[in-house]
Amino acid sequence: MISKGKYFAGLLALVILLDGGGAVAEPYLAVRMGLKCEACHVNPTGGGLRSDFGDVFAQNALPAHPIHGDWGLWTGQVAKVLRVGGDFRYDANFTQTPNAKTTNQLEVQQGRVYAEAEVIPNRLLFYVDEQVAPGTAVNHEAYGLFWSANHDWYIKAGQMYLPFGFRFEDQSAFVYDVSSITMYSPDYAMEFGWLRGHWDAQAVVSDGTAAGGLPSTNGKEYGLQVSYVESRWRLGVAAHDDDSPFARRKILGLFGGVHAGPVDFLGEVDSVQNDVGALNGVREAAGVLEADWLIAPGNNLKLTLERYDPDRDVHDNQQTRVSLVYELTPVQFVQLRAGVRDYDGPRGIPSQNTRLWFIQLHGFF
View 1 (cartoon, rainbow, N blue to C red):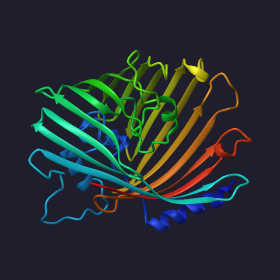
View 2: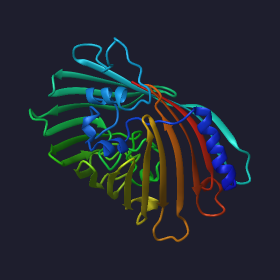
View 3: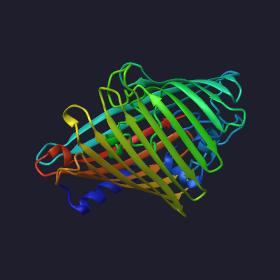
View 4: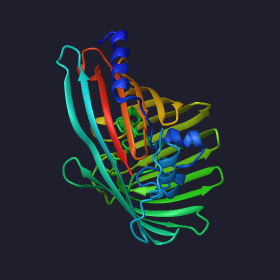
């Protein structure tokens, strides 16, 4: 592996190349501002199309040097009842593996478009999240959502991301290896949400296809998530029981965050008990600790420490990962990211002892 001196010198070179780093809608921003996910997103559990507040925040509070003019603010509204948005990520990455040649790749990580039709203002909406790149189009979310008059409860039905813990920007985080609930693995579900004061709760029943299974008529996945949000801290717990015949499992997660001046801390620990096929009886666990340092407006330094145990009954099979990412939002709708992820796993498995360097352009609207 590379020496520590070369490690930080290389990272510094990436930072200089990008002239900084930045941040865009992520869980740490909710912790920093003391907000729930619904404040910035149409989806009450976060991710996807931004709300009016989220759009205004992204154009005024996030950028280092927002560009102002007489054209007003973008809110995504293209018709009386229709709002749109999108995300685009383009990567240049370099992977170093012991005793192997360094590989590099330029790729479109993802391009997504979002659309919301609010057919009854503030009460009834229909929502779509479509991945248009790379490759052929893939639908991730398509659901209807009905709000109560006071917006203290809602019912959602269709294809959606299941509520479980934080929705980190990095969808390769080890905690997702345990829960299998990511923004690339939607499920057909019905969700009931309750939001009142500091409390936020969701109950969901789904087909159990988020873990890669097939739709089932004789087994479902049941989930419950409850969180308590204060201005400077939050704590939540999530539990899922998947009784589908293709992925029988029980998942438990604990997550929370603390706002401590210029640094915000987030943590999540997930565990799963598998009860089907070759994984029968296997218990997995993973944890992540993230620190985000607001160096200056539009500049964020992110450090994450992760650990993954694919089988808690087996010794010396754990994998750890350390990531350091510098982010810059120079103006609204544009983010630049540069970083390194260092994987350390069991000896003799080169694929689990790699180092990934990356530069990313993120556009959003």
